[in-house]
Each structure stands twice: as structure tokens, then as C-alpha cells.
Image 1 (cartoon, rainbow, N blue to C red):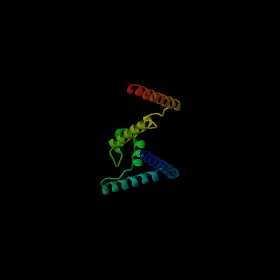
Image 2 (spheres, one colour):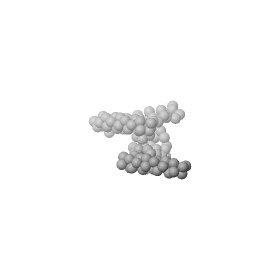
Image 3 (cartoon, rainbow, N blue to C red):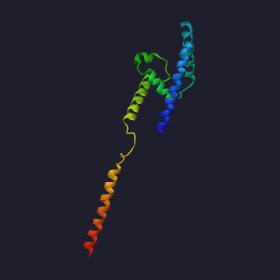
Image 4 (cartoon, rainbow, N blue to C red):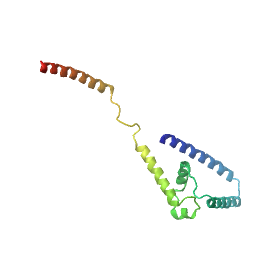
Length: 144
């Protein structure tokens, strides 16, 4: 289940990256005044939505995107931004992402014991077979 969830997050991040590239390409021909107007409009819409929604639903892909985007920004600057979560939450999400990433890379690829070589298996089975005959022979000598 964790592997499929990881693929969903990667797919979602890819989608967000591609859509961000297209949004950036759309901004290239715009003037600075038009960009500022759009930013102010988007901020106002965000403020309206924040008043209407008690608690926004944030997906794992949203968390990963925000944490990756904002983790390098200094805390004072983060506190100036209008975010739907607190700056400490974003930094915690980033720590969780890094912890999960390092846990995944350090985990063994296959669970359980490593497989035993065929030569060793044959040797052990041969010894067990020989010892079984010795055991049966000694048992018959003791009982007689």
C-alpha cells in the first residue's frame, strides 16, 4: 500500500510541476502590472476562501509540494506569507518527507533472511540424511 501511495504522490507532483511550467509560460508575455494585479486578485480570493472554509483538506501531494517549495524560505518571511497552514506545519511536513525518504533508502529491499546457496542446501541435506542413518543404526544397537 505504501508503494502505491508513493506512486500516486509522484504522479501528482509531476502533474503539479507540469502545470506550474505552463502557468509560468503564460506569465512570460504579461507585463509587471498585470502580474501584480493577478497576484492581488489571487490573494484576495484566498482570503475569501479562508473565511469560508473552517479547515481545508490537504492531500499528501499538496503537502509534499508545499514542503518542497517553501522549506528553504526563512521563518520570518514564511510568517509574512498568507498560507493555509502555519509555517511550523510546513517545516514539519518537510522533516517528515526527509525522514520517510531516508527510511525508505535505508530499508532492506527484501524482507527476511537472505536466500541460502544451493550448494549449502545440498550439503546440509546430505549431512542430515547421513546423520539419520547413524541415528537409526545407533538406536537399533542400543535396543538390542
